[in-house]
Amino acid sequence: MGLITIVIPCYNEEAVLPAFYQAVCEATAAFPASEDFELLFVDDGSGDSTLAVLRDFAGRDRRVRYLSFSRNFGKEAAIYAGLKHARGDLVALMDADLQDPPDYLLKMYLAITEEGYDCAAARRVSRRGEPRIRSFLARRFYRIMRRISNADIVDGARDFRMMTRPVVEAILSVTEYNRFSKGIFGWVGFKTKWLEYENIKRAAGETKWSVWKLFKYSMEGITAFSVAPLALASFGGIALCGVAVIAILFIIIRQLLYGGSAFGWPSMACIVIFIGGIQLLCVGILGQYLAKTYLEVKERPVYIVREESRHVDRADGERQ
Ligand code: UDP
Ligand code: MG
Image 1 (tube, rainbow, N blue to C red):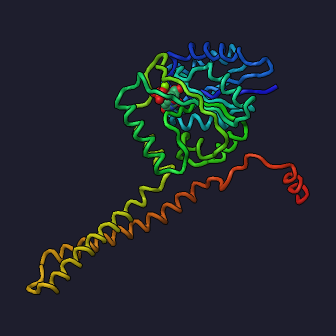
Image 2 (image 1 turned 90 degrees about the vertical axis):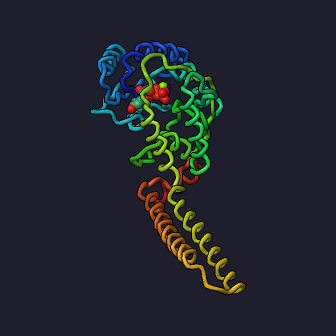
Image 3 (image 1 turned 30 degrees about the horizontal axis):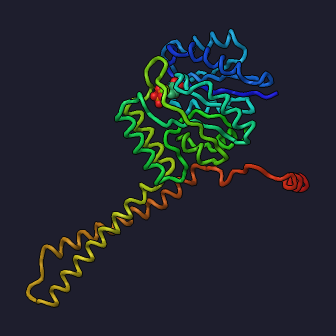
């Protein structure tokens, strides 16, 4: 018999929780009877009656557990806490607002148990119903991220997913403080099946993401998974030096060919640009060292093992 944990971050979700609970109960009823569930709600410092609703659920249903934060720490913190406290052999992660269709839980379960995937995740193929400007910016963001980062981030990927225990352990082994889960999910690897669906509107309540929060989230993504911005100064410096050198050569050659008095201010300008370029280049070099230090202090695991043969196990045992 297996235990499946469903982790649900909630921030001011009193309006939607009863409908969510109902829908999840219906979805879990479709699972084989051998599977047991644990619904782990993480109340991310809600200011409304979310916690009271969760207490009520927990009182009525032994499968329900909850954690309640002392203040709003953000969805990333809620995801981390949820994964850390999950006891299941399989762990699912879903939003409380019913934008993640609960009937996909069974599809994810089957992809893992029958098709042998480590992970099954949902991806929106459309962003219908979302403000235009938000979809536009989100698309740009994912495109830039894919280009400059070393994490495989799929466009339209949600945090909605189900994972096996080894995947959860791998995610928890990435202990960095500034977490960008979408990147971490891709970074840890493992075989992931992507299930596609059309965007669904929030069942009730308002989105918890203001423009400012989304902007901070995207900056978090870029800086957590790429050190490319630190290299920008070097490129700028090299380009500036190049321009200055060409201009100086131009002035010298012109002087040699045609003689006459040398240009006063253009040669000064070239020297200033050249020195500016050298300085930028040095900043860029510092940036490269900073980038290395930054990656070191994250203390991410150097590798993650997906499978090992029994032979390796025994050899380890013998050595001990
Ligand atoms: N959420 C959270 N903490 C926050 C913001 C959001 O736990 O600071 C939760 C929220 O309750 C919901 C999920 O994260 O379950 C997704 O939030 P939302 O639906 O507002 O985001 P959107 O779907 O608009 O991206
Ligand atoms: Mg939502």
